[in-house]
Image (cartoon, rainbow, N blue to C red; front, side):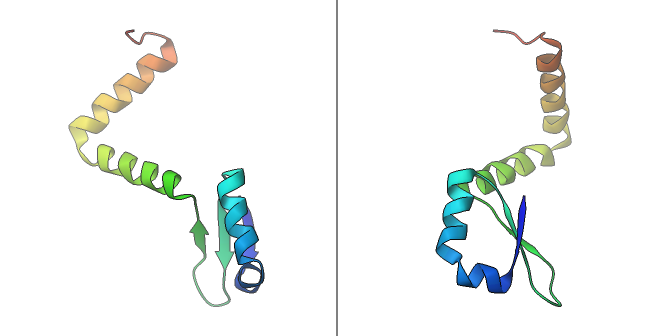
Length: 78
């Protein structure tokens, strides 16, 4: 994950956005006196939101964890 300050981002916005997409690498943007923000590709953001949604339900989260454990052990059904 790369970090740039707001001035660098503003001066190189197109290149930074292309880098986020082409390299699938997040960019942290810092500003003096403000919390940093992260720029991520839309597909990655949507995947994170979907994961968050799926894990909101305790029952669903438990089922997903069990499935992940089975995959790690190689016990997953075909």
